[in-house]
Length: 612
Ligand code: M6R
Image 1: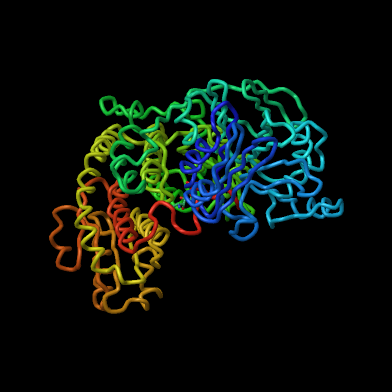
Image 2: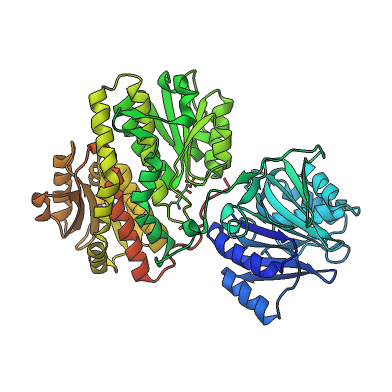
């Protein structure tokens, strides 16, 4: 995905755009660019690398004055990471109208359009699909930017959030969305357009989220929204709930560390008003209108990608245990392209932090088309998955900015637990069972606070293995997805190769990897599989592997088998992932800092993946 910020008003646009880009940088950070209209010209600066490189370039060039402008931070999809491919893109240099475009998404029919435009004499400067759109708008432009954008979008297939301006209309900006998020912040005689609210809240808390297929024309003191066929749309203005404190680093060095430490509070917030330990009730307003579909489901299919998929895998254990409804978990990307069996009574649960992941969204569409009832477990309020599911539960863990997902994972597992308890209670779960579970759940935030105190111990342990390039993460049962999550965290930010798998699977091949001193992390808490895990630990030890265990407080037996033990408090087996994942998040964090990599913006990644 990419980040878009645009401004029209009375203030100097460039500082607002640069500040906005910094807030949106987590959405993509291989290159950045900015354009303003000043003195009847569109002036553009683009740079490879982070936003600060662009900022320095603009300063060196004497600044970019102007009160209408747009900027973009890129995660490359079409074309290499270089200055020519960075946004904004312009229409034709020779015969163009000075039209600049920033875009998040993919124009799928760009090749056909490019050929059509080339035949008409257009000359392209980049390899991007976005430049094709800029030229197309230019080709259709007849002194009305809004109309040209509407007409161009009728010819486009794919996903887009765009902002467009034209040298010939220095008091107008046109924006549009289909499939990629875009919001308008409404200030006093000014509008701030952005991919998400993090770039808006510093200026105003009044905003509207553009719906798909909407085009908006903004001037300095008014705006109107229409369809691409120019039919007026009445927008709904909302008050933003997020405040600056939630998106600023505060005393933390990195967002990931901040978000790891926010987990206890995030869980408390997410449970607030949803769990009544006195009556043993789970109250989930977002699904109550569809309770029957859930209670009578014949099959539950859980979909997601990356960390969200790991949360879904944990939910599968919860679902079977608490509801006894058959449950399947699948990579959304695979579900989408199989011929999945969706029979009457199938419920599809899409899990996603961003609510914008293209694979998950596409799988959701497929499931809905085949007649499934759909539920979204999503963090970002108003995101596409949240809006397109029949019912849903927000994670309520607050904005997650670090690319490595941490508190969203905890939120996904927590919300799944509440959902499965809600369904189970209405099927066969006894009040005693629910009381015990909710009582234990209530203790999780303070138990995480205890685990967070292990941070220095984990850091010391990591230091001893920081030069090892291969790690294994092993677990059984509900802690097997935690092993996958531990490995994903380590590889995605520290670039250390790590594999997660069921502990029993190791002896079917991967055991050949184990040599003297190889770090092997076991999630070895006391539960129904504990004895089996101990046997697997012995298998690793006898081949020279160094065992690092996440174990249950008070388990002295395991200490003699391991080089390091990170103790977590005891809880019910099915709640253990909420505790056992925390040391693994800290492990990945410390390893990354020690290796000198960018914790919050790992190479090649972006916060959410909006392409299939
Ligand atoms: O926004 P989503 O939860 O749908 O994102 C899914 C994955 O792309 C995401 O979890 C990714 O794996 C993270 N980088 C993991 O830390």
